[in-house]
Amino acid sequence: MKSMFKELHFQTEGRKVTYFNIKDKIDDFVSICGITEGILAVQTPHTTCSVIFEEMVHDFDENGDEYLQVDLNHQLEKIFPPQTAFNTEYNYPGPKHMAFAKADGDETYIQHPELLLNGPAHMKGSLLGASEVFVIHEGRLLTGSWGSIYFVDWDYNRPRERKCYLMIVGE
Image 1 (cartoon, rainbow, N blue to C red):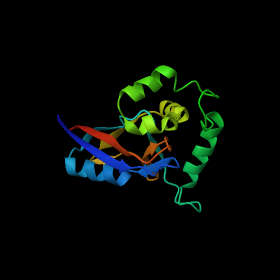
Image 2 (cartoon, rainbow, N blue to C red):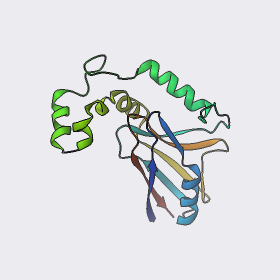
Image 3 (cartoon, rainbow, N blue to C red):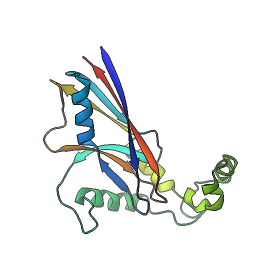
Image 4 (cartoon, rainbow, N blue to C red):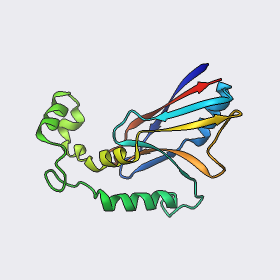
């Protein structure tokens, strides 16, 4: 049994939900590892991010966003509307969380507490999940001919550096 780990880094844009198609990076990792039979776990440590398995649809809107991603964002906003002010539709962030953020010493939150208005991003992350597991058979990831793997940052309050972990185990 053999295992290998890799960390991917992403710079998000802010101002909108950010999707990264990471399928090619994952295929390269599987190839380099030399594991022919095993599993691959893909996970984000961020509570406002998700790893999702979805079809790459080849069609983009005028902003360069894939149609399925635009549709997913639109439908999720019906469930979790944007949070534009404190103490409106969302209880989060509460006073203890605000105090924690300030005590943590992050000047960003001290000067701009509105950046903590990301309750909907946390809920989307919880709903869609932080990880996916994939089967590797005969040295290939079994995602079908249309399947892609995306890293998604739901928190559009500001640009950030994000990361994603890959762990492969097998023979």
